[in-house]
Image (tube, rainbow, N blue to C red; front, side, top):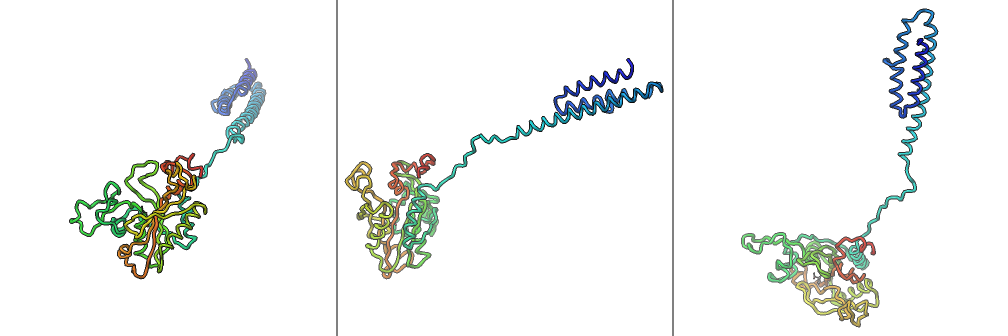
Amino acid sequence: MTITEDLRALEAEAVAAIGAAETLEALESVRIGYLGKKGSLTAVLRGLGGLSAEERPEAGRVSNEVRRSLETAIDERHALLAGAAHATRVAADAVDVTLPGRRHPVGRQHVVHQVVDEIADNFTGLGYRIAEGPQVELDYYNFTALNHPPDHPARALQDTFYVRDLSGDRAAVEGESDVLLRTHTSPAQVHIMEAQKPPIYVIVPGKVYRRDVADPSHSPQFTQIEGLVVDEGITFGDLKGTLEHFLHEMFGPDRRVRLRPHFFPFTEPSAEVDVSCGICGGEGCRSCGGEGWLEILGCGMVDPNVFGYVGIDPERYTGFAFGMGAERIAGLKYGVPDLRLFTEGDTRFLHQF
Ligand code: DAH
């Protein structure tokens, strides 16, 4: 075989290999295999030096032709494969606009907080201020300054969560107070009266804690809203009128309101307040236990002993206080039969409000 024939055979073989290269990488190794430093064509070209003077020009011309034709074939194949690779990448990156979007669920205020806000708004509309008190309290604020005698049953371990209980060792820690989770928002009354002179018109919402086992009407943690008014000339009539106004705003003007005598250590006289049942209108039904009335809150005139603890002159000032459970009011307002639903966090329940 002459060198020209060799070159043409090599060209045919290389063109076939170029056409068979399916990827850019495969094409590059074909290129190196023929045109690289140790490539087959390069080897042939090196051999040209050994040819006779007659053979050389023809062999040189053909080898140049073969090199150019291979370079062209490689360039064309390269353009084709690069285009395909690009198309593949674009296809992989493409956004399928027909796919359903991702949901971003919007949260909402918890129904109990909605009710707390509604109650607080009612009173701020009457000129009350909103205040807060600590949830971890001293026995002094939770009980003593609220006129609870030392042996009051609410102080017992089975009712109150103690953070630090010194009862067994009182003498050793003279002057120190038990620390507990407040069992009601009433201790905030004492903080407020310590810090502020009358006139006082204040609402205190907040969490409270009791050693109760959760059942449809009890929970170890719930929310109370406390009210306190101290001013000159405040009467029981002011208390009754304020609560009637509030309860009509909250439950509607048709509901009747009644006060029943009751006892709280920190108010004298004290009362419990009922509204007529919204389901039977006061006739008595299953939801009000046949009573026709629903107990809503506790209230009374601030006991002069409490004024004594905070240095307010009971000869000059009188006041009233009240306290209610936000979960209970939310439950009555929306007909929720089990207060545990409020804390279980089931969004199917919560989304209804
Ligand atoms: N602190 C009472 C309780 O938790 C509720 C209460 C009753 C608050 C009468 C008051 C009040 O301010 O005057 O049961």
